[in-house]
Structures are given as C-alpha cells and as structure tokens.
Image 1 (tube, rainbow, N blue to C red):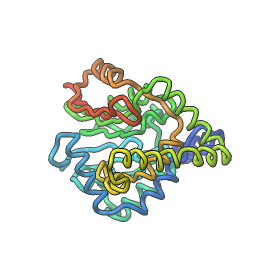
Image 2: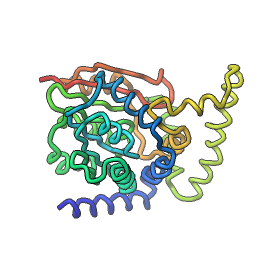
Image 3: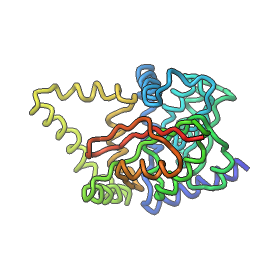
Image 4: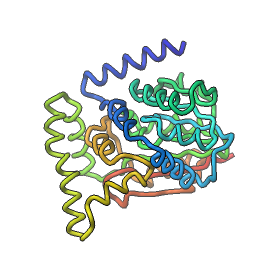
Length: 284
C-alpha cells in the first residue's frame, strides 16, 4: 500500500513540475546537505527547544509535516523524539532518508514516507502526535487553509503545533508570487529571475550593511545561527518557492483559536519579507 501511495505522489509531483506549477524544493535541499555539519544541527536543536519551550523531546512523538532537507527531523530525533517525517517532494524524502541512514541507520523510531498534507486518507491514518512541526511548508501546498486545517487534528490534547507561514505584504506579496511563477515556468524563466534577484539579494544586502557601517560578510557567516540554515539555499527557495500563499499573523491566530488552540509563542518578521512563526498548544 505504501508503494502505491509513493508512486501516486511521485506522479502528481512530476506533473506539477512539468506544468510549471511547483518549484523543485527537494533539488535545492539536496545541495544543502553538502553543507550540513554539527554546528547547524545544534542550532536546529536549539531552535526547536527555544520555540517549543521545552528542554528536550525525550519520549515525545514528533511529526515533521513537509520535512524538506530533514534537518529538523534529525534535530528532533537527537533530542530524543520518536519521529515521523513525510514530504510531497520525492527528492526531499530522499534527503531525509539520507540523513536517517547517515545518523540513525535502521532506527525504528524514525520513519520516513512520501505523502501529501492535502491527502485526507493519508492524514487520517497518521494518528496524533505530541508535537506537529511544519516550518515554511503549508503555504507551498497550493491549498494553504486546507493544509492548516489538516495539521490541527494531528496534535494530541495538550500537544504543540509549531508552524511558520509567509507574511502577507499586500501588493508586494502579489508581486513576489508573479516572480515565483515566472521562475517555475521553464529554463528561460529561471535564468531571467536568477539574473535579476541573485544580485538583488547579494549585492543589495551587502550595500545595506556597508551603509550601516557593518561588515557585509558577517551577515552570511552568522546566518546559520538562525535555525542552522543556509543563506544561499534559502534565497533560492524564496525566489522559486511556488505555489505561494500568505497570511497575516492575526488570521493564523484566529484560525487556530477557533479550533481550541492557545498561542504560546509568536515571532513576526515585522511586516516585511519572510515567515511569521507560531507555536500553539491544543486544548483538552
């Protein structure tokens, strides 16, 4: 049954790529694994503990919904969690399986699957978890509000939901959506958007640092101190990340408040570009 689902997910994913309706997230994360080191893993662990308001995850069940590179699945496992990872992108799933093989070969307490958060049959058979984690994922499904609605019931009573959703910048968000759609339209679109936006993010931010009398190299050296990520791979993900949806912080708060979730942590991007982070606890 699992093989049949994997084949179906692979087919759906490939079709969306060919139609220009989806960015190849997994290909980007495969490159990130070459940079992964102990420092980045420790930063990912620190990010989980700090945001979840927990000292460790020993004995807790952890669902990584849209596991991407697998970094945070690995961090959760190292913190003692029993981990289930899934992703819609077959290459992302391959990344997670590579990390599992590298650090926890044949570990029965870390399972990895292909699956879609929009697939109700798949979601229904997952069960419930102490922690459901989905950072920067659900706004890339093409049906963000359905995806948000699907992850809530996966959280146990008194469990935690940790999500990050792109901030709604109004007109600027519509503009970025067009950029991403062009990027995913084909080779010409990718080349043209890279020629425009690599200098925008690289030189533009360097000039800003210089104008503020800051060393522009410091930004890139210290970037991994925020969640252990890579500035280069995050920029590629931002330019090409399609589908693309956004929400205002209060919309996410209201959505989960009505489902008996209480927010214990909020980190916004101050109305700018990027993700707002939310941690909720589910009521009894």
